[in-house]
Length: 268
Length: 247
Image (tube, rainbow over all chains, first blue to last red; front, side):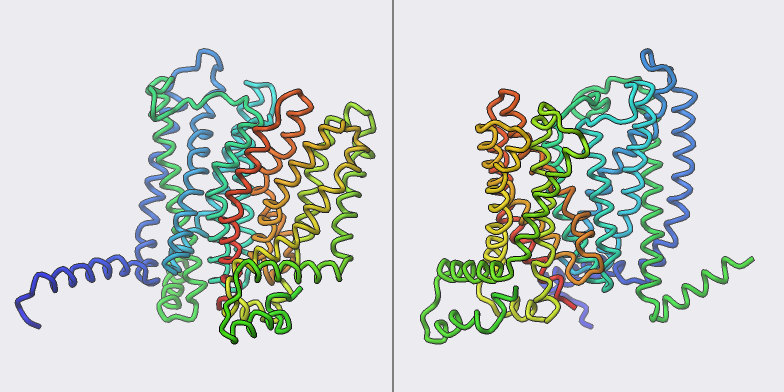
């Protein structure tokens, strides 16, 4: 190795090092180790933030002048609805990276996010129904936001079903990834069309462009809950990626030893 | 339905290409479209089955919901549109599966000139025998549901603009689910949520006309969807076909 570099060489070498550092994590054994290390932290963070959010939401936040105590379901409803949309975007983003750069791990992230996204969508619909009954007097209305949330659930289910029914895992990754991309282009169109079709839902209570129309304790409770949902979603996705890695790499030495270690640790 | 891939059909383009005179894409597309149509029409049962399905679904509704004229007039456009959606989906189920199974799809994707054009030719032929046929049958159903003549015209116009988008969506679903067990069920699961905007604007156009509102906005939006869908979904279908043959 020579001790002096020409500037051009140094640039090239740092670039190569940077890209290597990026790819370093994409190697399955390293990502497996990273996920194993991150999962307990994410779960702990989710528990702490969730407890704090519930404490703020259920004890500290004042009773709503119009709706009384029933509004408190907002602390689950709104974060779940946020996550349902955000996870779809994240899923489509990972799917695009997986398709364009042929990155297996990115496609696996997309697949791992889908059940969590479907769960959040279902939770948003379910808590919405529970909230709608006492306030609107009905479990369900064919309103723009409710309907597009339901269609979002169908998009998640279609993604999961398509991925599950193709046997070759790489082809399943690519086909489902393409479907996620088609879906993400379609989501604004669906939302617009459904809004055009019917609208009854109350306006968004939290908006980035104008001052929120709610007490700051309510807002902070909701943000805490949203962060807790974030931490939970990351942990759940990483756990799923870990399981998929073990299954897909079951013939690799590292995966077999990782499975053995895990089995040994889980024994009393 | 192995048209662009089969050697007899590929012959005109390849012999002409080997003589050094390149075939224009337009001529080739027209040739493919005619051949696709001939193949579909020779196996007429598929076309007839989809149309009869359309007719039967629309006939089922009065049995289930009652035959009050006002009720039928109100639900008519929606029923026709949902039945059209399902019928188009049904007719697309085996759009590429024969070639996929015998391996000619892979050959064709590798060697055919302008593969996107061949995809459009196949979907275009499929649309002419499903979407256009349904549009032509719509007045018959509209008569049973008591729609007035102008609303039938709006219905037909909306079907003419909307069914190509449904065909493209169905083709994408068919390409994604190649070789999968229970493919047609999965196709429905994949395609139906994406087809909601077409349904909203299509049935909405007739509803608006019945309510005394100008349906131009609905029809323009349907046209916009079509203009978006032709390039985007065409590319996506080709991509999905390539994915289906990759190992």
